Length: 177
Ligand SMILES: [Zn+2]
Image (cartoon, rainbow, N blue to C red; front, side, top):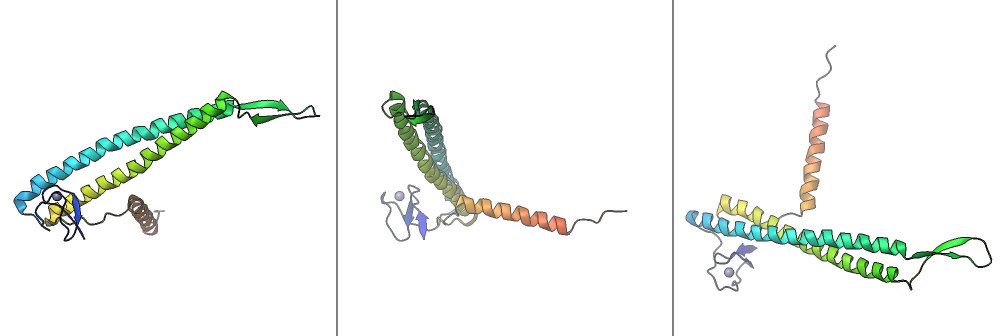
């Protein structure tokens, strides 16, 4: 099991000493709940700020990648197939458009991936803290219980809605004649 450090709100393994050297405890008193939860809320705010940065990474990365695709399109040139009257379009790797497109696709792709990966990690961290806050308020236990993956939550919500719809359909009132 994992617990929050009472002093610095870092999550540490059960029985392990926190790097801040703070007091170890699995529960807090009634009076300690409010200030503790406030500190955790501050952490979720930091997560929110970081998330907005990662989101701009994703948007800028996508924009650069789209520009890359446009330049890739521009790097095609029409050439005559030898001994025929026909033409074909081939990528001209010698032109500057081609190199611009490659640089833009790689840079945009990296920016997008970094933003997406760190964004997912941060939003998961934020979700975990919000989940733990509920638990601390209800039980005063400092345990950090693993929160389920967000897709599982969505899946459960969709399943519940479908079940409810089926139930409504089965129990619908017969039409009055
Ligand atoms: Zn600590």
